[in-house]
Length: 400
Image (tube, rainbow, N blue to C red; front, side, top):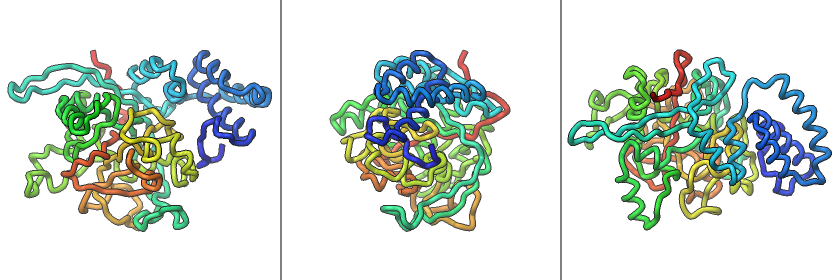
């Protein structure tokens, strides 16, 4: 399949050649997952009239896979297509897998035994295990922004080359209420459930937290994962100059450190695109968006993370569900600044990307830029975690 070509369902009425091409890709994922049930389930989905031609292609494909496979996509990426395999997906998502510094496997699963602090007594309580799957993107260079001919293009999406000098690991899903309540308790969850007269599920993305609170979560999670204090990407807020409301005027990020953080805007777009240059990570046809994200045409609210199809590298919900807050201040792109250093030094708001459940398709495009004040708490905004993986030690901490 050519780079940037839409990844689509085999039931969308495409011509036979495209169907066979896509089915071969799906077979490759099933084969790499290594499980006979997955391959049998895959074969059972194929219309009988297509099987002879497909199986001829698969014979050669299997030989190639057996000869040179050094990595496998996440099993959950394949199994999530089948409702009967929900327990299998959860098993994969909840099995700690260490970071592979050799680059042979480009994902890992981090398990954190999170404890809340009782602020009155200064004690730690609880001990819920929360899990995060990360996809590793190597250092690279890419074209950021959108071409002048792209439909619904905005003037702030100027095309320019950006160098990412470091590898980055992006969480494959947005932070959920389950992961957030391990940090902050159920206060936010219950307040928003009452405000909107709606029970918010634990696997829905957290929303309504401001930029400072998202950074606070990153600092807390770094400690919970038993990383060293020198791994904190954000310094102690007490050490920073304050604004009139007592918040840091700026909160610089140390991209060279290995703790949890918000992604830079360039990291976000690079991982969202995953090698594509089209309006969306799946191509230019916005009619396919309903298969990849929740937006105004197919949802009246946020939904559980990881339900629509992922992008080419396995990131879910990069289009829609909730906007994802980035580290950067919002500002004009500097075409002469070709290396990602975390954006401009100051701006009126912090960048958010990806669109939300109430956005139209145009606002869910890969290049679309948006911003909000760091103290604001939009109900359509959440966040996705990032970290700079280290070759010095496993990133997947196994709690004893």
